[in-house]
Image 1 (tube, rainbow, N blue to C red):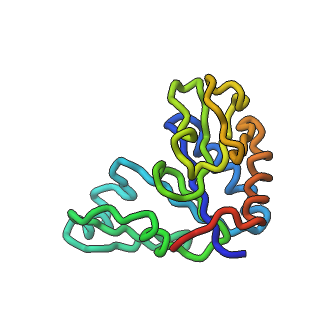
Image 2 (cartoon, rainbow, N blue to C red):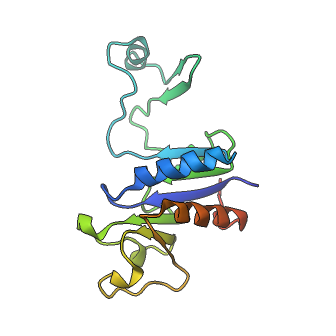
Length: 180
């Protein structure tokens, strides 16, 4: 199986992370190697400012790698450089069967939208042809008269196992191409 890529998008509070936790744990249990990219619009703090690694970054190091017997993290300071594109970041990741991307709402990649009308935000799928499936807590016909594209798969967010089965099927059929 080649590396495949799926974005998981939706508005804050829709349940993206909860669904991703479910998917990652079940895929990993089945031997699928999964990497995750989590995009944030906020600054990222991985260590307190007084710790050695933060002090070294603040003193001017371009990259600092934190390493322990349990994990390692590479922190790269952009220092006025533009944020790297998703495709640039993907090249830095270790090989995997699947890369799940939370965020990057408008990236031109295959995406699953997590949509809960109760949070008061409009669905993204009507305006995004890259969304190939929607996981929602309402039926497709409840979408305020918006027509659902025939090729769009509608999944029950309250039954995450159906989302998992859809994802495994999409992976088997190589429907989630990656372009690096």
